[in-house]
Length: 164
Image (cartoon, rainbow, N blue to C red; front, side):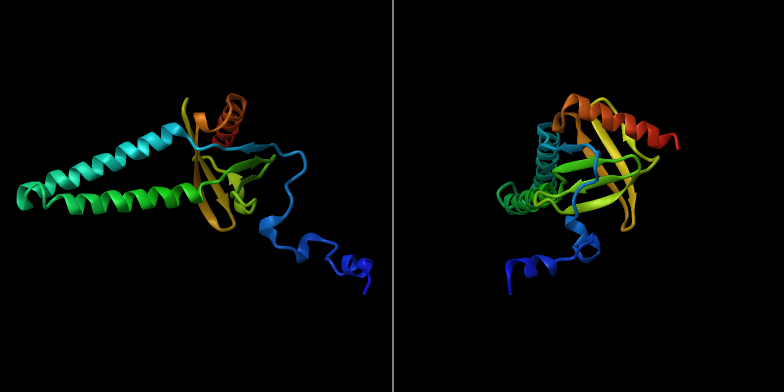
């Protein structure tokens, strides 16, 4: 078997390939997302409030020292949940004329669909509602996770989708 025979056995069309790793759409801008320090601080404050609430609720019944282990268990559970949530977050967005695609760290497609009219926008956070074949998903994009131009473009596209 020669080297050319190996190449001839590969599928000529994307139909035989894994659709999660198909190449991107031509001309669609890809926006790289960073971890948002603001969202991370909000999550940390929420975890701290939940831990304090558990300790405050249990300490009158069990005593201050005996309320620490359940509070630490809540802290650990919330921390693990945040780590899992951070790993599931997309690292890139691709916006086409009628498509919206999110990509994982490995480059696999996480979700593909189109922006829905339920998207919400603000000066610091976008909640993009995406309808795809697998159902509906919400993608949160903080202003400090992307550049100003990319955040503005996402906000405009969300507003346009809301007008449909």
